[in-house]
Length: 207
Image (tube, rainbow, N blue to C red; front, side, top):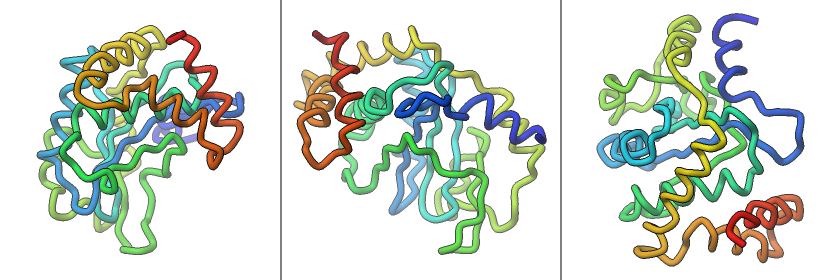
């Protein structure tokens, strides 16, 4: 295992528990817009007191913000958190431009549609990739490992506190709070049963 693989495992590797995740990824694309996304990256640190998340370029047409959980959480609860972030920080952006993922993509990786590479990037360099959110050549594994080595995972208590801070704000400005999002998932017959069960479990703290 090289340094990059070790850092990816430390931050994002899933546990063996089915339906639980440690990686949460929010993306903004079509087009990439760091000016619109950067308030979210700053806000989760300043407003929610969470560790700085990783920043990646997709290799195609967008940016990604990567959150690491110290302990795995149900996928439905992780999705509720990402959706709450979207509602708070990206409310004026068309929903189809925002991606919420708990099945994290591989980064860095060659992207077949473009022939370019996805990669993690330093915060001070993120604006440089607004017009070209990719690397033309494979990123240095050591350079990628160095970026990830500076990051910390979100502790469970801090995650729950952040979710609680997001809920009242969203309840005032938008009908879809994390609680209502989980209720939607639980009651949606088109969603996989396992995720609906996880949504029901994630709702317990609200009851």
